[in-house]
Length: 381
Image (tube, rainbow, N blue to C red; front, side):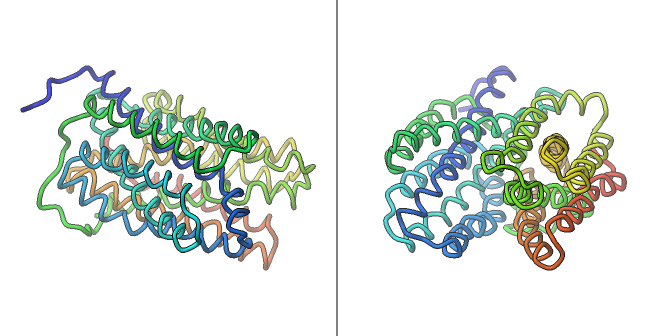
């Protein structure tokens, strides 16, 4: 029985709720990492090794998630992710040993990526209904959920509430939200039952993946090294070491809510070219003028620059006709996610040899790669 067609606004709101679920679950876990570290008495090195289980799960899941979305449809895959992802978060709060936590973080990355591929496939379908760019606003909801999750986490920490009860509360609410909203999501999307598990990207998808790689390397650098940069290079007071990260996150979230309007005015190519220039300019500003005001301004620019790149790339991947949207998204995400994984370690190696400012200079050049690659890509308008 075919579901009665709903209004585009209804579909948009429902899919936005699933982006919210994905964002708040990840942020809830991130907000309690220090507590988990203390409860298991982990060293910094041990914590780093433990945390690596999450991206490994994500990487393993990328081709599997694309295949599931292609065969099941994004609606079923998204519902599975919306139940399993929060449930694994609940289990993380219950885990008491390092091996248990490693296994659960692997699953957390796996189901988190299933959510990523399926919700973006749904978003592409909703964007098609609108006939204009709305992808960035969906990612803005994810960022807003991240802020919400961080705020709730800070409250839970201040009240000394155990991560188990914190995660239980978030998981219960998000599973309920997903089950309530799934009936209002798109029933069908462009998919094919003969899609392979591993699909080789064509030239167009490869270029999109490389654009995502350049941008996500910059994102990963901001997530992992912005505080260290403010501490060691800017030499900010202890209470201001997170200022750069906060500046970056604020403009990345805000930029996603205005990004769709800019895309409509500028077009995909000019928007991506402009984004790369802004990323590069922001990083170089922080490198050449390493004081609190200029570095904060630079990180504000970086957040604005990266805000619309990944949403635009995902939207373009879903519009191509050579393979299903889910498999195409998985192919592009695989390349892009490598940038997120490899960028931060690369920063560390170069910083050890030449200094942190040289590392950020290299990432600035990589950010400019977004502009250069966009100039050689013919986008689907």
